[in-house]
Image (cartoon, rainbow, N blue to C red):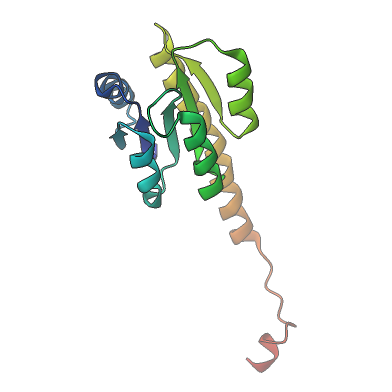
Length: 149
């Protein structure tokens, strides 16, 4: 299995580290932890496949970071993580492109792992589809460039 680069963003370093450990146990061990939204945004150039993002953080909120991430690269999968059961906020994050909204509770680690597995399952057909197109692509010999060959 390809191991995607996963950013874990939570102002509670201990909780973020527990997430990273839980993911590593499930063979997702290419993880980087950030304790604030600005650090995350400053490191988007590293092109994470997945961002696990706490909603409530000082300075740059998770919601604001979500908008910036999607502006930078709409193909980055963002999983919102919150200690609050705010249905309206969950709906708003999904409207702005979050893949999922997970409540911090006893099931959060299992839900995170399962959500990442879903993302990876979605990505596999995309890769295969791209390579299938390359393998079955017809070469057009009558193109203007090919007439000079």
